[in-house]
Image 1 (tube, rainbow, N blue to C red):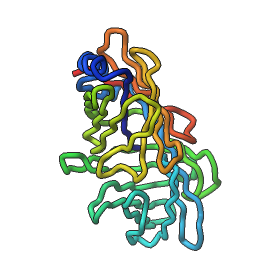
Image 2 (image 1 turned 135 degrees about the vertical axis):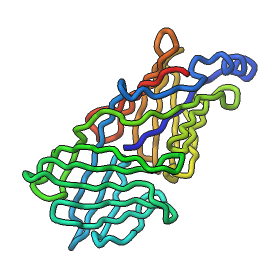
Image 3 (image 1 turned 30 degrees about the vertical axis):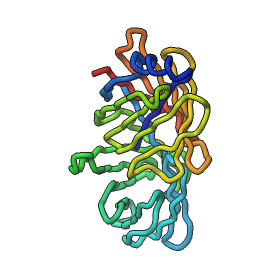
Length: 258
């Protein structure tokens, strides 16, 4: 349930400056939730007595004892699992003691569907809740198994800013995720920045043509996702097709120019 973006360009310095000013990707873009779709993937595996491995879209594994206590998680966060009943878990992620995400998981009676009342923090400091529905793709009973989201609509809009970067590149700024990707399109890996960005996160990319970019995000050398960013012929719409590694369906984000 989480998402980000990237950057571009090439050529020599003088030409690069004039290009950056007129680059059609530069500007402010507003997400249109009605035309965007997100698929979410998670896996839960038994790791011992009352202990579980949690694997979300990033692919990293977190091993958590389900006793309600905060335990070390990915990217400097903590994770806790509280078992409220055989079919009800509460999963909480924190950073520096502050709650970032909280999921209230409930299983259907037949064990084939998992609903998640997912609460997350917003840049304003407020919290918002969205209800997600997952279907079981592996496993037989309980929370252990593989789950794909059944709810594909995006429930909140956010703004993406694209700015020139060092003459021949671009910066992609996602305020909702407090993240920035800045790069030149020379095939090299560029580090991503932001307080919630995973350590050793880098991005690279290439320009396919004047209105299309292809990007790769990596975490600790492993590909996390690939992206294709396309401008409409009238340059008023931006479509980002993101394919997370290990996920069958891509996430599609459609933005309108502000």
